[in-house]
Image 1 (spheres, one colour):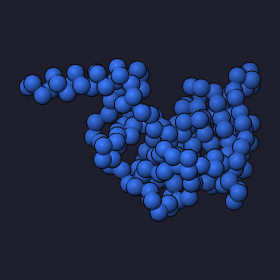
Image 2: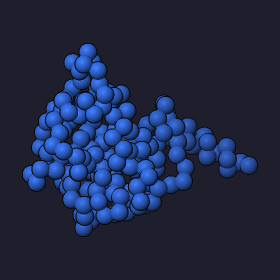
Image 3: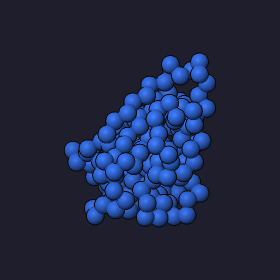
Image 4: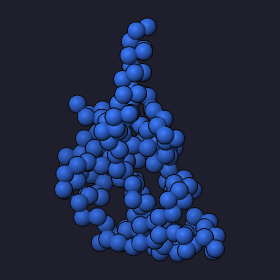
Length: 176
């Protein structure tokens, strides 16, 4: 896990949520992605901000919270009903963000590629669809057997502009 990559993501919206599981394992989130902090010393928001090299005069601009892990998401390394997803070979840049796509039957899950960057270089990165207790799904990112991150997908398919642009692109290529 590359802490510097996490820091650059979190600096965009200046938000840190530090979660602590019942077993003491800590996770860090910005509201979209949650990363495992296994192997790190016990963290506080102040320590995280120091790791992120946030200058003292900028500390007040950050929103920092500490909470228990969200009850609706299973943070286990192995969840029986997880479904491994295959990453499509195409990414799409949309409004300055690069999105990765994971087809699953008639559904397509998309996540911002930047949220995967802290794990790149891992030995065996896999992506799995994980059902949340209240319905809906998240993308569980694992390195080997270890859960490294939970990422909330974007539903780009609900954006009429996005769908129209992709349809135009597909139509142009199908004419050739």
